[in-house]
Length: 147
DNA sequence: GCCAACGTTGGC
DNA sequence: GCCAACGTTGGC
Image (cartoon, rainbow, N blue to C red):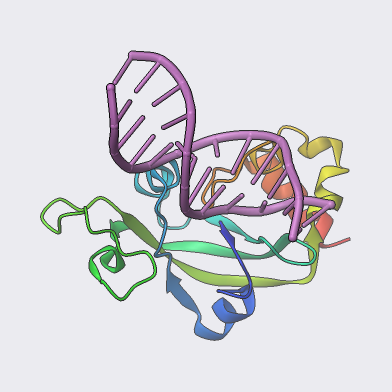
């Protein structure tokens, strides 16, 4: 899961303990949350639009997908006038903090690891804020974070 | 259904 | 700030 640290960082998650992942307004990203994320699933917390960008921590899914109420709040940045509360369009999950990595694993370092070359995050043009991670990639990123 | 215009993401 | 990539919108 990606977040711009100026908006919400791993430090924010560590301080709060858990959060709901509101504001996703992309159907593919929503579908991953709604269809594929289960309580207990582990999450790489990625800092996007950062200097440098990279994996900053680990979280865990704490609640399966449910309607994102911010879609109906006209004062919210991600308000969507076309979504009907009777038929929710946008969903979110809750995540809880697991670990703030001792040091960020930069995107550039990830790109230099051949074991990660087919990781979705690193594919050209990909920009989904929620995307799947294979276990082998997850483990490799953690191994890199610990060395 | 096609596609141009526009908006967003996010690395650099 | 620039720009590539991609998604959405809306006219036709």
